Image (cartoon, helix red, strand yellow):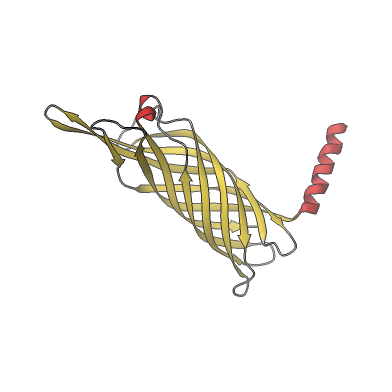
Length: 215
């Protein structure tokens, strides 16, 4: 009985705090790349990024709007994400430099929590928005590019990201809207593990073009 009262109190408080709750779906083609840096002075070791690659972010989103004008919202969801983890290392050997390349597509479930600020209407039914937040990223799979065997043991099972974005929201009616924007997802955990993490760090970033619908 006590739990029921707590649930009812939470629902009543939520209704007073949030002016509206909307469900949405996001689909975002993306470009992923790795930021690479040596952790310490490694004699002869050279590590650098190995270029960018195509990725994807998509999934459902739940937005809690604040205030009567709905100019603020807190958004969360469950997103599927493909990140590119790619770098190359050069080691000096007797016969010259030895080049080693690592190129993976990693799959994650992202659990985001972001804050969105909306402007007043810049045109009929149209607002600009700015987004700031973070996400917890749980690795669920992936494989080396060009290989059939799935093996991601080189990378940590958990990542985390900072999310920055901006875009346009266009209302199609009282309850439906479309959103188009640009988002930067910046990884801030060293994604490699074992002995490699002691020598250098790899942070995986994504730049995505966001297409969303709310209803």
